[in-house]
Length: 125
Figure: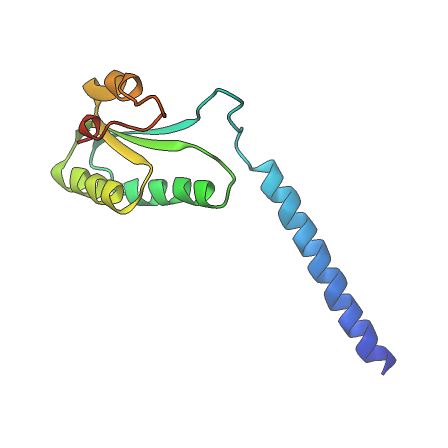
């Protein structure tokens, strides 16, 4: 009976140590957070063939969904091939909070926002 108790106690302590290490690691890799009155953006400049675009966006969306980063994602078309452009359009359609624009429309993207801070739809189309 004593050895069973030792095994259970060892498992509990091991789980606690793993959880503590996971939390510390999470704090170490957490990107900087935007302060009051500030906005944080992740801008992906895509040019030519971009086979890793979906993986990059999914990784950034994971940071947002887990609360590690509160940011808006922008994909800039810097001359993407048609297949990459289609992938970007699918990502924008499937995930709220991602904007897709041409390089020349980027300044307009930041200035054409509503008073509440929402994107104007015609900018990212």
